[in-house]
Image (cartoon, rainbow, N blue to C red; front, side, top):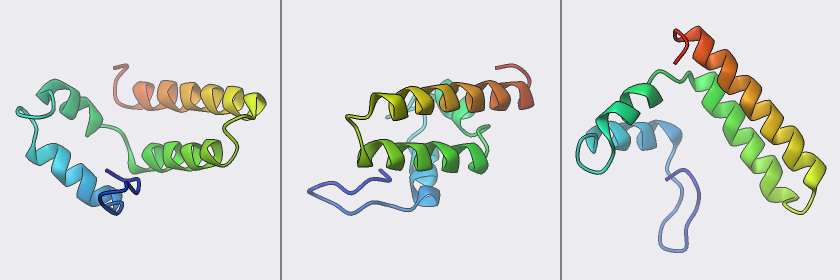
Length: 85
């Protein structure tokens, strides 16, 4: 939703989040939505930044490894912050 597609422009993160909430229980599993909503905007922005970095150099395996390690660190920190999900 937050990436440009051939058939539509990217939506801002807040609009994507609203749509996920609106379609909870129909298109998206409500339990997954509940957990998704506990993720802070800071972590989500960090993940978007990492994705943008990877998309610029997808063949760079070192970048991919660093990004995966960063993602795991952020996810662990976020899980701890919301009670060890």
